[in-house]
Image (cartoon, rainbow, N blue to C red; front, side, top):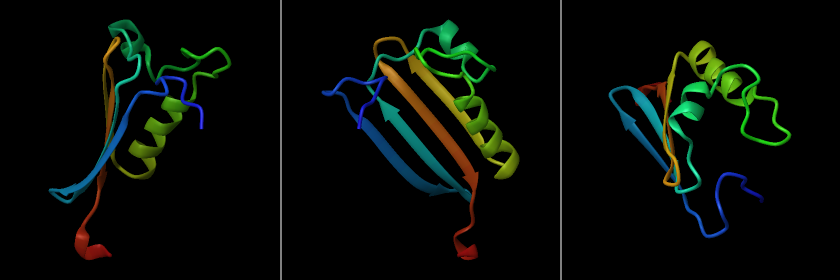
Length: 96
């Protein structure tokens, strides 16, 4: 698999937890990160940092999480440090 935002020596960490009737999924990497400007523009139509990107991926993900699952997504990134995505989805353990 080829990761564009992280070098082969980089790390991606995934954490899942059940908290206050929500499933919290945290994905963190130590890749190239984003500047404040890039972070603020993330999720806007046709904004991309990739050579062949459409700029629609994050916008679609946000829409699915919010509209289809009544969830939330937050993104934090620091240039040359990495990026963290936190996805919170409503979830009750007793519904399984």
